[in-house]
Image 1 (cartoon, rainbow, N blue to C red):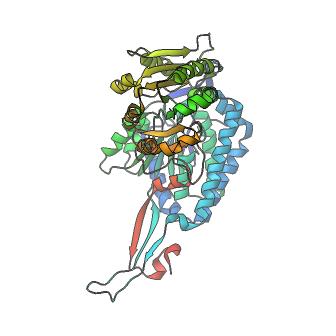
Image 2 (image 1 turned 90 degrees about the horizontal axis):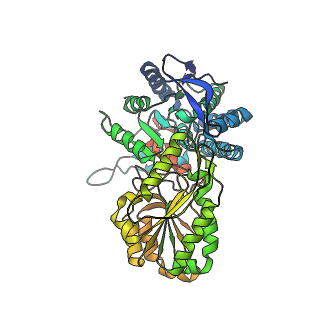
Image 3 (image 1 turned 90 degrees about the vertical axis):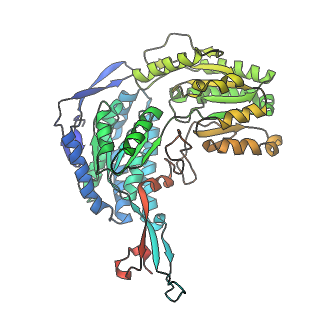
Length: 508
């Protein structure tokens, strides 16, 4: 049942008077449920409960935390069609996407449960003593990773499940032993409350301390700012825009005790197409990328927003073919009227820049909040001289840059802002010539895809979902996969400790 209230630990609370509702972009109507924005008092209560819970939860065994994570997965599944229907009504996304994203959310929770059952993920290290060493005796030193403290997670607009209330940030933080306070995304507050109810049920069933999880409602930025600045919060996880992520990062740096903000932000995910690939399979590439550009109305963080190739007759033909095939894809519903308006406005602003040519643009009438695709092209010279063209247009939009030669292509890549992904489309006979391209691209992205499309993020140990700023605020970490747990821990050393006082994993 959706109450519209905040979960302050295990207790539903609505002490404030400010309310808001979610919106169904597909029907273009306001949804029925009313949500109460959290007050400062409720935020303080959630932070205090999280701090108290940390002293217990951080010491819980890996098996107990695994039991908790698996119970969350079970309770989310028990929400059944109610969760799927609410997800669809608040996002405009189809049933298949909702079921798929729920599956990914369940998979992530169970993946972390498997990881933390064995404390080897804490990277235990032992440097044995040598008290007879001259001239200075060597102490006994043992090191492991320990949880950092209460974490605030901001729900993502484009993934109401997998990157939100019980998504990767929350799952990894709980796995690490950190209580979580979720700042629910206002676009899918009902979905967030349902998932929160599942987490609270799981916490009670597995004996977790009150305050191990809270869910905070808010329609604007004030509540989020209060959470980031709260002295009892020790880290932040965020998925969203560069503007939002950078604002939180700057805010956290002004605290008396600065804290890390792990933000996964914007990306245009450059795709490099070699001349041989254009000669060999241009039509196939155009077909694949027309679908990748428009997948989910282009609302993926790995959407291919930039294609790079060297000028040629084959490139000219490819650009035309890509444009035709892209606008032939049926328009899809975007997440919210504000997101649709931003897509239109940013797309128009980019195309109004000097020397930018529209290749193809969907012109037919669409339902409200549905987005028609657009493909544009510019020269390499124009792209280099006008950095405004480097910005992300969130939606079914992509730009093809026609480079003069390989030197200019490499220069463009080297001057791009940090990206989540880069892609190389090349033929086998070219592999020996790709070393410089791979090296240049590697310096600007977190992951390189070879002969594929970037849309999609596999959840596994080898995945890096992050990259140089502004793709993320710290390129040393991933937001996806088991490695994402490392954001919520810190190294800690024990020197010359008695055996009986050491954690089990560090004992002889």
